[in-house]
Length: 410
Length: 118
Image 1 (cartoon, chains in turn blue, red):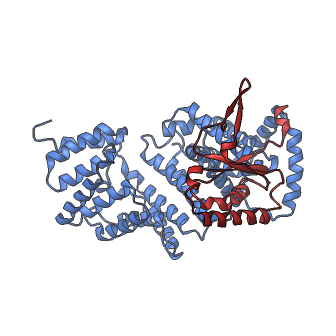
Image 2: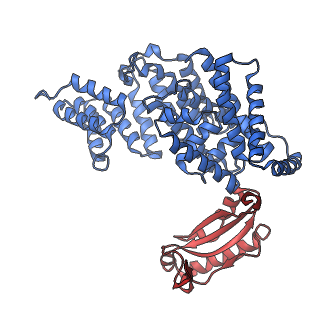
Image 3: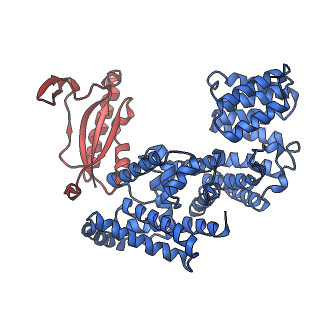
């Protein structure tokens, strides 16, 4: 990413959500507002690359978006109605206190993650409306068909308009905040796992960290919002060490820890301390605490595994999903030979319903190997290899199979 | 904005509900209408059981039964007028019948602005 692309990306994500919210409030049409800002982003990407970034990029985007909105309204022949609505809204708003720009962006985020919208549409809509990604950028980052994605976004926007989903931060935060946090978590994970993880000019992981920070600072009393910000900040602080210069995936145990971003890890730990001070535990805080244990350790060997195993115990109570259980088993196996036998037994017990899941086979392979059963481990790795569609993971398993071949040479 | 709340249920599941419990919920429903008078218009209705349904299909064919053979049936509807979707969801969530298994409320915005069809 060139420095100007980075400036472009941060300017766009700072401004787009605010602009969509402001235009929506002004014209009363979510679709027009979102479309107008999207158009301005596309124009900015082209013009700023060609002519350099303007002195006041925010104002540039705002002007372009307003012009687009007027054009859209004119072409849809709805200018008069919008003007009607505008005067009605102005009357209504006069009676309420003005919402700050941050509140507006948060309200927009809650609308994009509304439970009335299809779950698979919430992330792409958030990426477009709140942080200003273009549809082709989203499609290329997540390796999905652009047309399918565009349709999904259009359908969700129509539903916001037709059902009257308003831009506001809900009163019952505890009901709605988990949906918002889940979308940001998914955004980071998609960026983390997907083989590209970034478009040619946007680092989605960094965008997710930023958005989690916006939510946490806007809702300072919400412990899980801080927990998520802590988790993503710490994960992202380790991101540079996850791949070799040739793009090979490196497991945590083999990572060069000097490449971790200490500033980010400290920031994440600091967020986690703030979350803990609110005394309302939750699964993001637990995951962040586990990540913090790894961040503090000098090496895989010197990691405080007992604490990690304890934290996983709490996490399984909240989230007994297979991924959590598999990771817990790996942690347990680090405590000693007896625990390694128990960890393997626990993973085997999860089998059956996880037989089609590559990580189950990969975890089982690792634990079999720890227990000295190399041949069975290689067979399990073969199964994992056959099941994964992710190129980076395939290469990792292939490397492991070369290092520990089956004794018959296959 | 105006919305229609469509109250649905599964007759098979409601048949198993203890009559005293059903009576209690019915009382709460009555109170619910009183409490939300301001948001609910008069044009709603509670429907006779689904066995009474008759459907006229394309071509004028008249058949016994509801339009759609499903486990769930529509038991009634109300027209509400509230500020936005979140308020509609809030009101739907407070529908006392939701205490019973197989009950649902579908929220549908009404067409109010006919200029979109011009």
